[in-house]
Image (cartoon, rainbow, N blue to C red; front, side):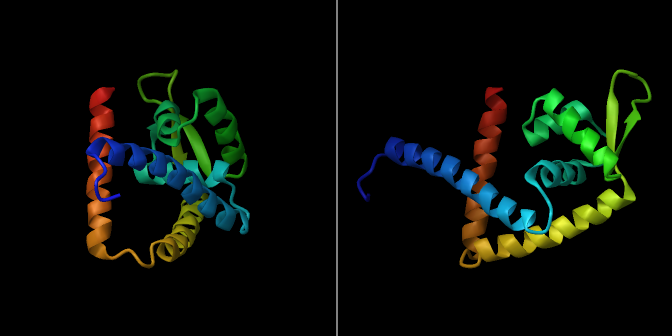
Length: 149
């Protein structure tokens, strides 16, 4: 391992990152599903909270990583559960803006609390310095991806 080229190391990072992301998501999903929260419901709510209530359905779809039609069906369910509401755009009537309801905000607070506990457990032996390095590397990768698009 010590004499690996940068190219070999980069290749290993990519493979590990893909697998780790999948396992991370599975760990979160299994813990959250135990309290009745499916990936289909908690992920869009968290993205909506992080991006700010009042974003368009297409912006939310891009953030969640779903195509628009899949997200529309999911949003219909969240509307039925009174967790979100759709409102028309002030200028463009074709655009629907998605907002968290008070019940949606309470659900997000509950999800955040549970996510914090799960993530604390998963990252228990990662110190602040290591966490900062990982976050810096993620930011570089994200910037490179954004520049490529």
